[in-house]
Length: 188
Image 1 (cartoon, rainbow, N blue to C red):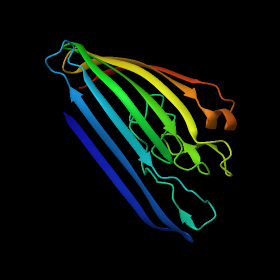
Image 2: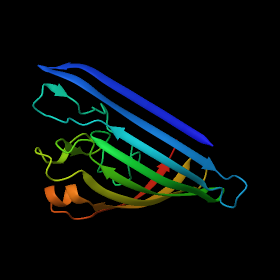
Image 3: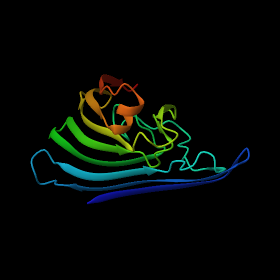
């Protein structure tokens, strides 16, 4: 078994507003080393507080400070670590010594319906100031792989799809989002 816990609390002031926000990241995994392809199944939960009342003088939206690394909250990079509930289940496989394949399912919910949905660069994607658009953002399915040619060269590819939920359907055009990528890494 493996696990990881990360928690952060933010407080202080911004102009006339008081800051009171927090976030957490929890992962529990189990690797089956004796099985073929050495599968690792994991459950993950990410939370970041949102602002329940934009007019109360308290900023409750967690500020992720820096853009997140690609893939922590889904490989389509449409959801950041702000105002979010994100349960995630994933599977890592090693079909060959130099090949890893990973897949997962994310479910996204707003922590506060009156706050916005933020992407990985902390920009607001959509907002429902009165909270009437609901809290369910959508689900994401993803798969990606990495092949190591040598110690210094590797190729990767991935595909993810964000299926819009109630919140995005009511605040945007409601189109699903597809994301495909390839990578080449060459360490010198």
